Image (cartoon, rainbow, N blue to C red; front, side):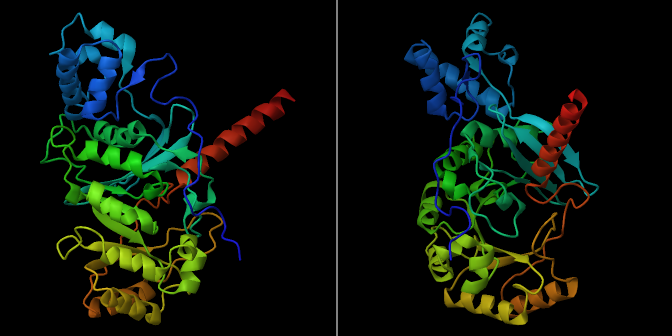
Length: 392
């Protein structure tokens, strides 16, 4: 039986040269320290000046959150027009922003070439987590995921990935950047897209986010979630070094083949072995298994016991996040009952493995991943239809 959608990385159009804006200026957001220096040298600064200015720009962009060259007080006034003429420091465009009654915030963002994607901020008592997207759309077609109903348009650039963190900091008023006392404490690469299918851009973006001279977020507070791109998992541990989360969602081949089609390429056993081999995983840095609770599909006592058996068999330092399914229009599944979820969780806890149930957040807004984008597209289509009808 053919697998719906592509499960391998696919070539996707980049559109325009996204390093330059329409007027030809170069985008500095998302550039590494070396990238900033190279950009300045490329526009004519000598090596010594470029090194100094790159250091200053890095501080203003990533530590102070500044995007206006005129506000960079330690850069000579005579040089600011030269910078403005050649460079820009921007953010993704905010198309729509929603705030839930529980404090969850969701943004629909737009790239410079007109593609929409999402990010979500989830506040808790002792931390705040930003859910960051890595692609516009997705290619994996996980059946419970609303993003899986969308075509993959393209990978996000480093400026667009880092830009999500910058925008959230803007909205939360968290400049200058500081390690303590801020609301945005954690990042999960768990938004739209499969991060390991955009590995280079995700790696380069997270290195900027983790740099102690700028955004300064510890790698222990960053989690990358994958649906199971086994060949890239080792590189993720070695080259990025962040926490790993795996979208498991089933414990049998039959069910996981259905709801997470990449399982037909990289099966459960191969995936769990890659988890066992993940660099840096230990009891202090456990691997998280994400498990969405689907009524009468993956939520039986037998499923729970098999999950415990698999984790023990591969000797995994692990915890399980049980996620009540967040329904969306046309979804082929229902959420398990609260009683069934509790029973499932209890079996895993009794097996010596932590299995908290994630509290549903943002259900009074378009909270499921991809819903805000879909709602916006429907609005745009209805406006176009109305205008066409009126013109007719």
